Amino acid sequence: MMEQHTLSSLIWLRIARFVQRSNQLSNEFLERYDMTAAQFDVLAQIHIYEPITQMDLAEKLTVSRGGMSRMLTRLEKERLIVRKQDWKIKYISLTDKGRALIQKAMPEQTEFQSSMFDEVLNEVEKKQLYMLMTKIQKHSLEKECPQK
Amino acid sequence: MMEQHTLSSLIWLRIARFVQRSNQLSNEFLERYDMTAAQFDVLAQIHIYEPITQMDLAEKLTVSRGGMSRMLTRLEKERLIVRKQDWKIKYISLTDKGRALIQKAMPEQTEFQSSMFDEVLNEVEKKQLYMLMTKIQKHSLEKECPQK
DNA sequence: TATTATCAATTTACTAGTAAACTGATGTTA
DNA sequence: TAACATCAGTTTACTAGTAAATTGATAATA
Image (cartoon, rainbow over all chains, first blue to last red; front, side, top):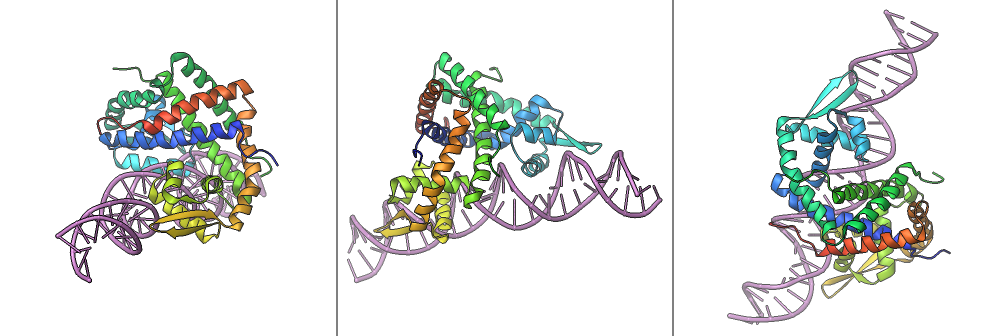
């Protein structure tokens, strides 16, 4: 029987707990813009890539089609985005209201998110961490569940 | 106006997407034990710390009291844990069934989770990553939302 | 002893994720 | 042209998280 705690599984725990906690803080922070962290994340991606198809957006956010659909319905209802049907694909763009909101929220939220790293890591450490996380994240996208 | 993408915010995206993806894979993997990743996580913590109070467990998992309550109700219904009320605190322990399940699932799940790191990082890199994530995660627990 | 305060746990109403079944417009083929 | 296949998007039923209101047993106090 293998060891119960490998170094890797301890890393996993640290990462998972950090993301949990960090999302709690971001949700609290973004209350001032009447947004959740998930909504900010979606609007920020649309801001960069618009116009973008619903599928591509789901893939960029590592989220299921169903989840994407419901989230966009909500954002559309609040007049932050529009969906234009072209052929059988829906293209997502920001409305003026959505663009104004994300442009206002982005600098503050980026700074808040960055502070979680900037307050404890120096430049060299941040570059190291970015390199390591890039490797792992790309690998996770290719990886599949064994013996399904 | 500050830059839209700092190195730190790119790190954040990598970490968040990795956790999302990694949870998807773990959920798929744990189907064979009729468990979700969240349930595994709770049972594993109880296994280490039992008997543990419901509050301490919530804190260790970075989860709200309400969420903890509902999760434990579910696990109790499946006869995997027991709650013993002592004074006004509830102490959580595994049942024999719960202990058998987690002992069977743990080695496989630990190995699967570890493989996400082991397949792309060497020992030195893993130690670096563990050190960096420990700093960040501890910091996030102390950090609070500014200007609430 | 009756009232009140305390505080862990629960409940409620919500957001946000999943898998899997369904929808519906567009092409393809018999 | 009628039947079928395709496939992005939607819907449904579920797990799991949150904040905030509620519950209920214990301890403190009038």
